[in-house]
Amino acid sequence: MLGGNEGKKTEQYAPDLIQEQTLKFIEANRDRPFFMFVPHVIPHAELFVPEDDIVKSYRGKFPEKPYKGIDDGPNYKIGGYGSVKTPRANFAAMITRLDKHVGEILDKLRETGLDKKTLVIFTSDNGPHSEGGANPAYFNSNGGLRGQKRDLYEGGIRVPMIAWWPGKVTAGSKTDHISAFWDVMPTFAELATAEVPEDIDGISFLPTLLDKKHKQKEHDYLYWEFHEQGGKQAVRKGKWKAIRLQVKKDPNGPLEIYNLQTDPYEKDNIASQHPDIVHRMEVIMKQARTNSDVFLFGQSQYRG
Image (cartoon, rainbow, N blue to C red; front, side, top):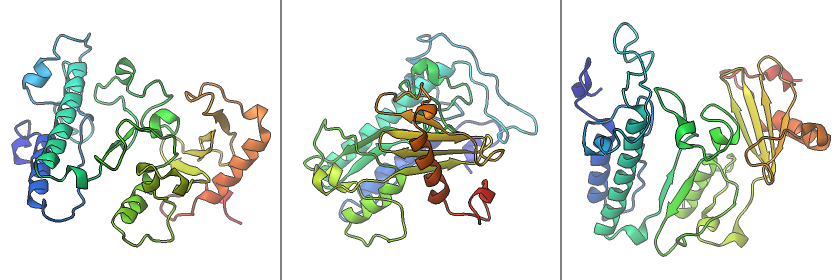
């Protein structure tokens, strides 16, 4: 807990404290190999920012609709986010602050001579959200993709990933290699010449980073499930994407099928045209998961 934020005080801004420790960590470990996870928490609900020149530069730049949140009472700081008069200006200020922090990290790596020895990956854990006054539609935060955080449509699970490693990762290069967060651990393990466990779903994408695509292994498919909002499942297999909603109500419910090669925005459900793809995706959804005593998620479908 941050003492400067007790009660209704707003004296300590966590992202700035995280950044301060990040730069100290790089300096302290400049003479030995290190792994550093920097959990930037901006932009996020709630849309609070320090009253500095960054946010002031955005005030009056956007049409604003003040967000009324929870500022007192038994649910204060527990069951909701605080009110914000200028949510769009605050959101823009968060993005600028994040950009500033990333720039300071790269500058520190250059200053310490670690830039050519360090792989930096910048990514996000999910798509944009609309909580606390955030408006992803206004800023086109999902780039036109369908859905947002908590959706299994592309807008909820497809996120940017930027890799920076001067002399190793070709600047300006792009890849259409399909990967997911469970590939990060085996990638880092291979990079560190550490043993990679055999009982994992991840595949190292280090060959793609180093432009050795002939050595890159590919996923047969990617599988997701989400246990809120009635339960959801999704499978990505090559260009095909399958989604099932309301799994808790109907574990064998209908699938939506999309061809992401021609329809990346998932506007045209073509399940009726491809019964073979529907069947293949149903089989994957049954086989991909492991039953859990914690997440009782339509398991009657998978037993027997």
